[in-house]
Each structure stands twice: as C-alpha cells, then as structure tokens.
Amino acid sequence: MTQPLSRRRFLRGAGLLGLSVAAGGLAAPYYARGANSQIRIASNPGLENATLNALMDEMGYFRQFGVDAQTVQIPGTSGPFDAIALGAADLCMVSGYNGVLSRIALGAKVKIVGAGMKKCALTVFARPDEIRTLADLQGRTIAVGPKLGLLHTLMRQLMKEKGIDATQIDFVDKGSNDQCYEAVVKGEADACCSSISHLRDQDGLVAISDANLWQALPRCIFQTAYASDAALRSKHEELVAVMAAYGALYDYLMSPASHDAFFQARKQAQKKFDKASAQAIWDFNETQRPYSRDLSLTSDDIGYLQDMFIGVGSLKQKQPFTDVADMSAANAAAKLIG
Image (cartoon, rainbow, N blue to C red; front, side):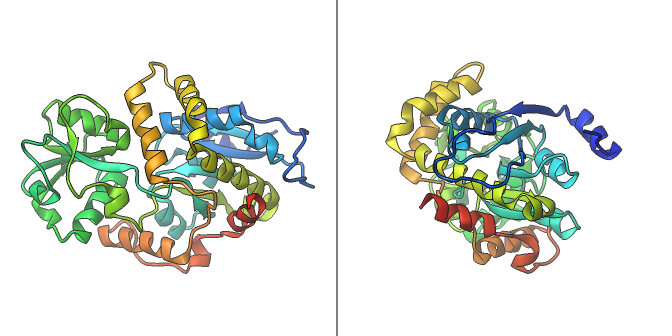
C-alpha cells in the first residue's frame, strides 16, 4: 500500500514494527462478523503491555471474537496516539498517556472509546524511617517524571484531594516510574510515585500510609483506550470485537485460573524475569480487581479527568462528552460478552 509521505516519515522515525497477532478467517463462535477488515492496534512496547499482548495471543481471544488484528509497536509515551492521529493505526487499547484530552481539544480526530486499567496501579514509596504519611512529603524532594506528565499530574491531584500544599514539595523529573523508584533507592530523592510492581522489592522502601492511588483517587481512570474518528466510522464492528476480546482478557486476568498463564506471558515479555514484580502485579490484580470486562466510561469519568487536567493547567476547558468520547463500541462489546 502506498502511504502518504507524512505517515511514511512518522513510521520510519518511530521504528514502527508490525506484528501479526491474529489471522483472519478463523472460526468465531461468539461473534460472526460480516466485515473482514484488519484493524491496527497501537501498543507501547513496555513490559506491562507486552505481557498483555503475550497473554492475549496465548489465550486466543482475538480468534474467539473473530478479530483480524495487526499490533504495531510504537515507542514513547505519546507514540500510540501520534500513530492514530496520523492514520498509521486505528486504536490503542491500553495507554497511560495523559495528553489525550488536550490533543483532542487541539483538533486531533480521535475519541476516547473506553478504559484499560481503571484503577491507578501506583503508590508513593519512601524509606519508613524518614516519611510515614503524605503530610511528611512537605519540604521533601519527590521523583515524579516530567512536569505535567502522568506521575506529576496524579501527585498534584492527590495533594489537592488530601488538602496538602503541593507548592511545599519539590517535584523532580527522574524519568519513568521505574527510574523514579531507583532514584529513591540511590538517595537522589526522598520519595517517588511509582508502580505497584515494586511492592515486593527488598531494598528498604515501603508504600507510605494513605498514598495508594487506587484508594486515594478512586474516581480517577488510570488508562484509557482511544480510536480514530475514521475507525469509529468505518471499522466500528471491528472495534466492538477487539473491545470484547479485551473485556474477556481482563475478566480472565483477574481470576485465579490465569495464574500460570500470566506468569508464562510475563516470562515471555521480560528478558530477565523478575518474579517479585510479577507476583506484586498478580496480587494487585487479584485483590484490587483494577480492570473490568465492561470497558465503557461515563460522562462523570471523563469529567473528572478533565477537571484534573484543567487544575494542573494542561487542559484549558471542558468539552462536551460526545466531542471527546464515544462509548458505542464499548457498550456493544459489554453486551456481547455478557
């Protein structure tokens, strides 16, 4: 296929790799689709996404729902969104990119179509002899990643909802959440906002009291799914099938039956398997149930995110729900899997 020059340049610059995840033409016992179009799913190549992709492939949910998908690996926090906005992909199912709403407000022809992980799988780590509660963070250096990035934004929102003056905290950019964690281990910061995958690490850091974000920010949607307006128009049936497959995957992922398959997928995705982090994520999925088989979001869900981004200055004003979101595929998928 001949691609427009802007897309070709983007694909070359991003190092885009197309991986055929599921072949078409297989039996689809749950969803006999009339359409036969391939759908392109953008995925960041991070460990958590790679684990989900491996588990999806192993369990065959795409085949079960008659999906003909091509997963394209796009590096960078904004990479999947950029690919969709440029027409190089149709859909991203799991994204922690917090620039989605501001990019849509600036004119990107993209809509939020549902949720990935709904609960925030983050907490605040520190050495227990120095910091015990969120109030103890005042006057301290906190590693959060880039200014107005996801970690910084969520920490600002946490401080706001807990009535703590964020101006008394020195937020510093130490990179990704794993790098932020390492910065505290090395003594380069007093605390950090980082992944629950570190909850079983044995390096002296602990999750401080009242700082588990899935509990402290219960209304905050951690990961959104988004698709191009073009895909919503021309590949709606395919979107429904993909979202049904992910709903089934999430439902399975949170069940005890998935233990062995999850660990196998994790080993496949991680070059040097870290059993402690895998167990921490498994425990979190089992106890907190951060996903949902129904991927739809409400206007209140989107409104909360808009208010949060307006509060930190990364979004100027609210837009109507229908201007930024379309839950038609998610709603149809939820009915499909029951």
